[in-house]
Structure formats: structure tokens, C-alpha cells
Image (cartoon, rainbow, N blue to C red; front, side):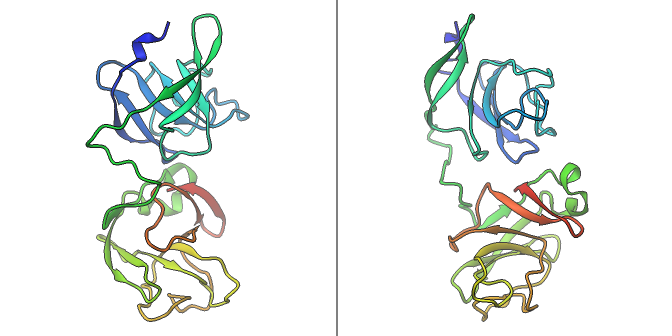
Length: 235
């Protein structure tokens, strides 16, 4: 019933408001995307979806705007980075939903890593207009690596504004603090091992806790300061 999906080549089209990639089949009007709540009812499960309807990249939920959960296939997931390369999907087969293992084979020119940034240049993406309008200026900022701090981690600066991204093991100087990647308008020290902005506090624009100092996460949940209120955002 859904044999026409077999062998389709899905090409990345961009990112939706949740920060997840979405894809379109090169051969047909078929799409692969991530939806927080497929009918927009407020109590749905997050999932990857294969659908014949083009998703609206400005939305986080009900991306096909049908007010229902109508599509070819789905599997529930909290991982917005990319669909699993092999997973059991629930597929609509005309009369009932059927469990089917789908395999996504990678093309030779496509890079699929473990969710870590792999380039010296980074572009920040997030749907700030809806979730955190005060930080909308951050959207699509491009960061360029500047060097390495004393803790061995790379640090980055925006090409267009004085905004930095760096790794700090203890942002207030208190050694009980959690290690994290930070977006900040203060330039980090290159000689300090912690509290790199030397403010004796954990004041910054956004953070993502991580034990990996080698690279910032490529798709992850960050805490963003939205005018005194910390909000979770996928960046």
C-alpha cells in the first residue's frame, strides 16, 4: 500500500521552528519532518513523520496544518537532531497501523554525526520570534572560531556582533557548578579555567550543559534568558 515510498531520496530542505531538520523527496511530493504535536491539541507526542503534505517551517506543532494526525508513517522520539537511521515506524497501510522497520541509508555527500558541530564556522538557528522575541537578534548569527581557551575548548565570536560562544566548567567560579557551553555578550578570558567572563556569576544569554568541551552541541536544548525568564529552546 505504501510501496511507493521505497527507495525515495530525501534531501534536506532546512530547519523548522523546533530546530529540527526537514526533508523533501527528490522524486515526489513526500516529506520527512519532526512535529511536537501532530494535531495541535496540546497533548500529543513528539515524533518524526513521513507525510505527503509540505510542513510549515515556522510552526512547532501540527506542521501540516490539518488539525489531525494524518500521514504515512510516524515514530515517537525526543531527538530533534535527525531521524534514526533504523527504527520501527508505525505506518498506515490502508486499514490499520502496522509496525515496519525503516532503514535510512546515507548518501555519500551527506554528513551525519553524533549531534556535534563539525565545522570551524557555526550558524545559530532558533525560532526566537515566537518563543523568545527579546533574543531574536541571535537567529542566524554566524560564529567563527577564534582560538582555544585555557580549558582546551574552542571559543567563537559572531561575525556581525559582539556575541561569543565558549565552554565554562564553573561559570560563577564555584567549583560545584555544572560544565556548560555558553552564549554571552562578554568576551571570555583565554587564561581562566572557569568563570571565563570574570563576573563572579552565571550571567549570560544562553547555556547548554555538557561534559564535552571539544565542540558545542549541534542540535540541543538550551536555556535562554528571555528578559529575566529562562526558557527551553532547541538551538
